[in-house]
Length: 135
Image (cartoon, rainbow, N blue to C red):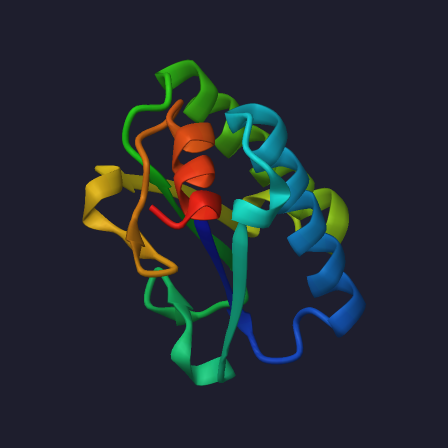
């Protein structure tokens, strides 16, 4: 359900670091929003060095843009963004000053996964049950 897109300059993160970061994003999201890790999608997007700028100058940030369903408590989202930012620095070695984490949201019914409209936060069990039952 949630989608995290991690954008970097090419060759910033090796395969093992990407795997470790994806694992941490999944663990953190699952723990804070109380959903199974199977719900969490992490995508890595690498751009050429001349395609990423900060303050009008070529830069090498780590940009993490997360999409979640509207309805999670604000305190949870604040905790989510803080823990992801901390994990990003810890896992990648990229200084905190070069890490930007943004969590965006929209209503669950604005997204479809597996051919089904997503459930609102807290309604996941019924959604999964209906999926298993073929409803």
